[in-house]
Length: 430
Ligand SMILES: *[C@@H]1O[C@H](CO)[C@@H](O)[C@H](O)[C@H]1NC(C)=O
Ligand SMILES: *[C@@H]1O[C@H](CO)[C@@H](O)[C@H](O)[C@H]1NC(C)=O
Ligand SMILES: *[C@@H]1O[C@H](CO)[C@@H](O)[C@H](O)[C@H]1NC(C)=O
Image 1 (cartoon, helix red, strand yellow):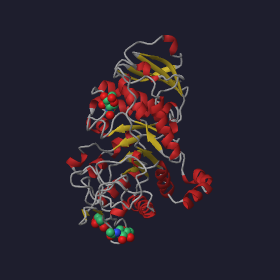
Image 2 (image 1 turned 120 degrees about the horizontal axis):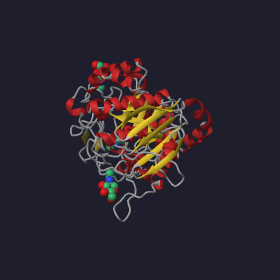
Image 3 (image 1 turned 135 degrees about the vertical axis):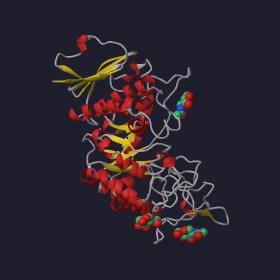
């Protein structure tokens, strides 16, 4: 980023932080509106529209939609975008169908989040030398780039771009975000997604691929209502092949990225995801860190943490799935829907798995909404043992997961059971 811009941003830091970014501390429940197979089925935008009453029932405030643009033929899911302004070539539906879905969501007070894939871009074709040629999909030649817009060292670059500021990605040419034209044209495109299509927030794909300062820049240029970054690292394992109890370094990486990206963006809480998936199998003691707090990012910077159980990668592609047992998945949701952070409900769990999960998710979300549990709610851990985890949230809600009974003195006399099921219960204080 040019120095003049850095200077401008530091000058304007106060006004940005005060006026441009609304606080995310109002209760938010995200919904991931797709899985890896959604592009095969086609018609996602139209089918989601039919599910809006269901989404509203669960108190969902934001729906994360898949990457909207044209994508390489072998990547119909959208993660190898090419013509960014071409939203008609998507397997999920046309630009008009997308706009209509977003408008219908908005009528119910639900905001749409676009999946922003800007680490890399797939070329329209190659020039004689084998270097990338891009087309933006616009008549005015915006985003019509050539190999000079690709990071130096990438095999599709002609070597005149700047070095990559993050990890190289093997799957497609890595975009040179240091290039001012890239910065300007990507910001314009995101603002077009806002004003023309109706998106109100972003899910930044693969943020390890470029420096955090660029996320900060795009946040400042586009002022989303809500934004979350995918910074995916594996949790730490010991010599014995078991995940370490202490995952402080893992969550610290997420917090560091959020702060370096300007502090307004949130991050998926991969720490909580990893720990929770192990904990529900008889290791609930993992849910308390050395300071007596939740061990994930929600234990240190909950306001910027987006919790989730599974997504289109971890579950659909079995890259890091939660235990394949709907009873265990419900325990995961009992945890994230009663705890701080911004919880995400995954498409499969709510719209595909039906009976086993739909009712629990609705009930748990209703408890969250009714009690005003939000990203910054307080957690008082009452018990964390192998087979029992019990916590009080905001001095209002008490929850318990795990097969073991709990000592009666942990439950205050004014607690009334609000909802319960196999190996869990949630109470509200009256
Ligand atoms: C996509 O379709 C819409 C509506 O038919 C049209 O306005 C728009 O120009 C199309 N986009 C492209 C890139 O062809
Ligand atoms: C690549 O694009 C840049 C910027 O538009 C331009 O200056 C340059 O001449 C182009 N290079 C080639 C080889 O076409
Ligand atoms: C994380 O690391 C463990 C231990 O090395 C490995 O078994 C596991 O497959 C890794 N998971 C992911 C998602 O990379």
